[in-house]
Image (cartoon, rainbow, N blue to C red; front, side, top):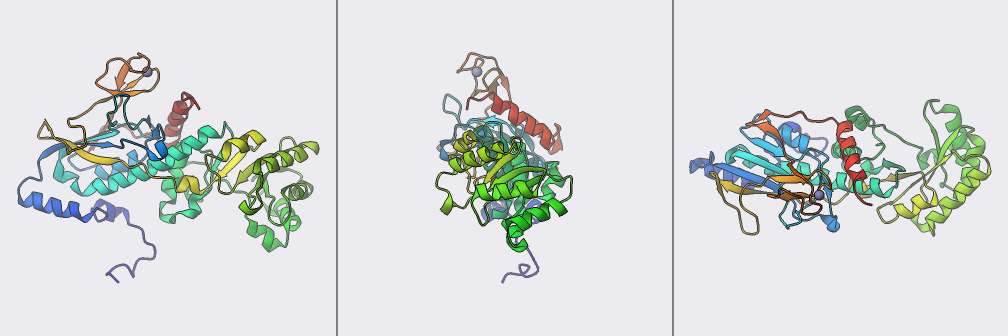
Length: 396
Ligand SMILES: [Zn+2]
């Protein structure tokens, strides 16, 4: 085994290793070495970060990962422009030109080593935040809870929870996420509690007796018996029952929406019209609308959020020493994306919106001026507000 691997308890790169360029693809290291020896590493270039297309033909994405990119490039002789974190973007303009979501300017040697981690920051985070925003929209205003941390390496739990929270998810699950981003951490109860207590009756009674009073009572009602049966047991045992959660296993699901409708009926029948119904277990974009319509009040969404497809951004040089220069398949020259103030369309070099005729305005913010901070980075709640306002303006 390579030196160092044995001393490491968890296989995550440290912040220092990322800053030192140790998580880069080694060909960048070798390129930098060659350029230095050839006396070309100070060559001034402009590079753009573009996606060109999105996973599953999504028409728009939510840009995430800007803050980490700024932190990585801070102190290097690089100027960085970017769409603000949380910006809704189309991969191409109506004219078909890939939208530059970030632009870098400076001597190439300053960031040669950081293309890999930079792309890693924005590709994964933007994939997760885009997925979260899509689910936010489909949930028709009902609660969306992020349950997917357990399916991913714990080293990136904060990344997942920040990305879903800024994209409009209502709550996350880890204490660390709550601490770092001020997002509410929620939880109901696991099946383990029911099994270890000896059955649902015993578990619900223990929740009523021992769970801290300030924590809302949410009973998981599918461990051993039918969801309706266990929901009624929960009502008996927990007078201030706030909600039930249905995590019905796939093998028993049949028509999950019909089960939700039936449980809703039984709760209402007994006067518990304010008791909510949460659903979880393998939920994704296709299953959420029918469940929302059936009366589910909230969705615990796991793997489909945390394991969202990445947005495959690429970084390409478009200018060398002030002159357009780009590889085959890429549009050369530095581009200034403009956004329509009315409908949000992005276009390059248009004074009027090609979609609605609205006024276009520059949209990139300069975050670093030769490595020095040039704009304030918004906090998670401010970004979240921005995302939600853009989503509200989009048709479903
Ligand atoms: Zn427009």
